[in-house]
Image 1 (cartoon, rainbow, N blue to C red):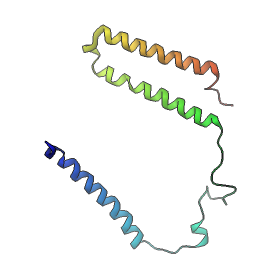
Image 2 (cartoon, one colour; image 1 turned 90 degrees about the vertical axis):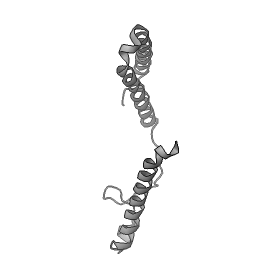
Image 3 (cartoon, rainbow, N blue to C red; image 1 turned 120 degrees about the vertical axis):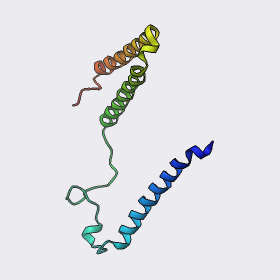
Image 4 (cartoon, helix red, strand yellow; image 1 turned 45 degrees about the horizontal axis):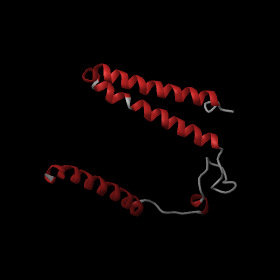
Length: 118
């Protein structure tokens, strides 16, 4: 039974070999002239100022989490779209409830001002 997975294992090993080979070969064959300027961290062509780890506003995290939340929930419509004829009315009711919960969550976030960027 595991013999069916042999092509996947071979593909994984070939991809791993190619990745390691490219990194090692570029390190060995590429020019190596390190200077102070080349070893500096690159920050849009400017001199780095301040610490590398700084605090971000909560708005960035909140926006990212809301995007991921609503984006992932929308993905649940694709399996339903593939088998909607077999699910008939009970499937339609289930998707309707899911959509209502999604819309209620969206309206709640909208009313709280989570989608407003100040």
